[in-house]
Image (cartoon, rainbow, N blue to C red; front, side, top):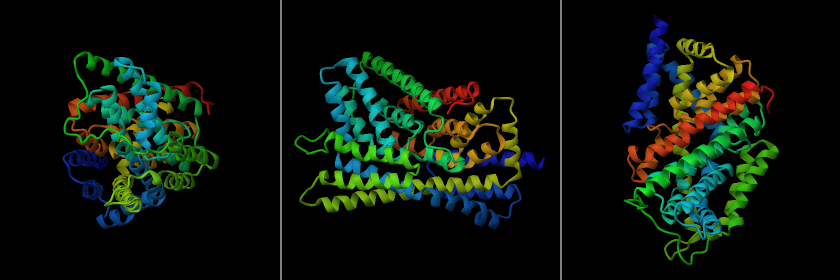
Length: 443
C-alpha cells in the first residue's frame, strides 16, 4: 500500500507541476513545493530532501550546462541585433523565390523557414533561444509569402526540432547523452538521418498543404497586434557568407573535438568580430552601448532558461530518491516491448513531465543504460530523437510565451506546432528505434 501511495504522490506532484505552471505560477517555487510534497508522502525528511537530492540535482545541472547555455544564448542575441539571421532568410528568399508567387512561393518559403531554423540551431544556438531569435525572421518571411500568421510558430519549431535530432548537432540534447554514455556526436548516424528525413518530409509537406488550403479559403498574412518591421531599406546587413561563418565554425570544431564548450566559445568570438560591426548605430546608442545591451539581455535569458531547467531537475532528483520511483522504472522497463521502443517511451514521458529535454535526458539515460541490453550508440541516438517529442506540449513555457508573442490562441497557433514537433517527431523517433531493432549494429 505504501508503494502505491508513493507512486500516486509522484503522479500528483507532476500533475501539479504541469497545471500550476500552466496557470502562470513560476516553476521556481512550484518545483520545490512539489518536491517537498513527494518527500513528505514518501517519508523522506524534508530538510534532507532539500539539502540532498534537490540541491544536488539543481546545482549539478547548472554546473554541467551553464557555459553551454550562456555561450549559445549570447551568440543568438548577437545574430538578432546584427540582422544576420534576417539577412540569411532574405537572401535565400531572393535566390529561390525571386520569380515565384502563390502556392509555389509559399512552398519555397516553408522550406526556407525550416532550413534557416535548422541552420541556426545546428550552428550551436540553443533551441530555446533560437525560438525567439527566429521570431522576427519568420514573421518577415510569412509577410513576403503571404502565409497566415497562425503557422508562424509551427514554421519555427519544425526546423528547430529537426536540428535537435540531427546527428552531430552541437546542442545540449545531443551533448547530454555523449557525456553520460561516452559516445560521439554523430553516434547512430544512419538511423539519425532517417529520422531527419521523416521530419523534413512529414513536417514540410504538412505545413505546405495546410498553408495552401488556408490560402484557398481566403486566409492571408496579417500582423494583428504583433509589432512588425520589414527589413530596413538602406541598412547594411552582414553578407550571407559572413553570417554563416560562426555557425559553420561551431559545427566543424564540435565534431572534430567532441567538446561543445570550446566550439561555442569560438563561434561566439567569431560572431563578435564579424557581426558586431553591423549593429545599428543611432545618436542615442552607439555600437558599444548596443553590444552591452545585447549581452545584458543574453545574460538575463541565460539565467532564466538554465534555472528553469535546473529547478525541475532538482524536483526530479527528489522523485528519484524514493522507493516508489524505482518500482515505476522497473515496471516500465519490464514491459514486453523491444528495448529501442522502451527508450522512446521512457524519454518522451520524462521530457514531457519535466518540460526540459536536457533535464529529462539527464534523469533517464543513466537508468536506461544500466537496465537495457542495448548499445550506448543506440540509446544515444534514440534518446536524442525522442527528447524532441513531448517538450512542446501545450502547457510548456516556451510554447505559451511564443503564442503570446504571436498574438495567437492555442486553438489557432498550436495545431501546426503539435503536428510538426509532437506527431512527426514521435514518428521520427519510432523510425529510428525500428531501424536499431532490425539492425542492432547500425552506427
